[in-house]
Length: 68
Image 1 (cartoon, rainbow, N blue to C red):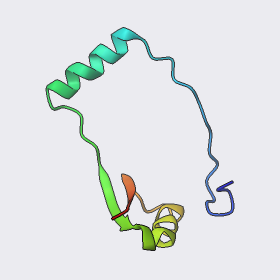
Image 2 (cartoon, helix red, strand yellow):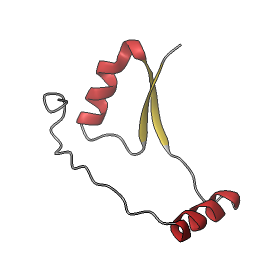
Image 3 (cartoon, rainbow, N blue to C red):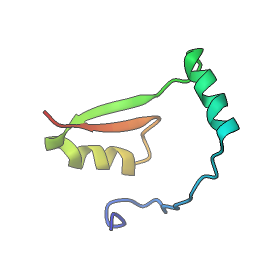
Image 4 (cartoon, helix red, strand yellow):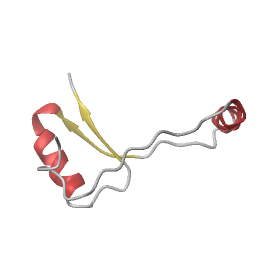
């Protein structure tokens, strides 16, 4: 569905997550060792510009579309 907008090939997978893995992540979060990297934020009206930015391979973190 989004193929016309992106040159990248999308691959879907299902992670095999178990309790010990989740406990490790929970501990890392408690210790403040995990950080979400947001590259840019775009208002909904500029969603096209956000897609251009991601499609151009410039994003180095998450690109967020905001709605007021």
